[in-house]
Image (cartoon, rainbow, N blue to C red; front, side, top):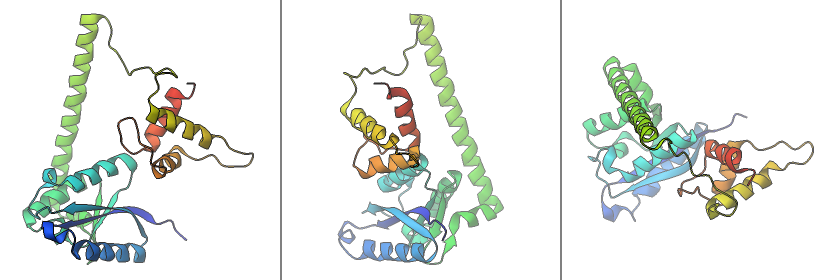
Length: 234
């Protein structure tokens, strides 16, 4: 039996009065039914409460939170009940779809079973828009990296050094980091013949225990690995 593909659900109601109504329940039921019938596991549903279908991505807090989580943890699929739940206006739909596709995130409409982002890439004009957005995103990233490098070089010239990440001692270790480090140590201990958990699996355990990073964010395999390598001797 194949492992289900992990996915997020995204639901939206436009009116404040609809938040307690049947809108969310209906959308989630449709998403879960599609997921179960097609080999997906919905690991979390993001609820956009009282947000108009004409709002862009910048005005959708749940959408932004979902994309941020996707870029951290590797879930690459979003399921919505239908495109009208993503947005009412075609222009907004198009903008959000191009945004998702440029991040390599698949959007599936449960009502029709269509992989909408795949359809976007099949259209030469829409594909070009996705590629253009990707180019500008890469340019923005490159400019930021250059700006940080120039700032570090200027600091070295002015002070003769450039401070890196703060080095903790056992006494100054933040409580959140201390708890995570201890839990990682426990998971690293294995009995003969027992397979050690991967860093990604450890991150899932830490998140399930309600632990968070020093910045108050969920753990990922990457930051669990970084914590262990940097602080395991403390």
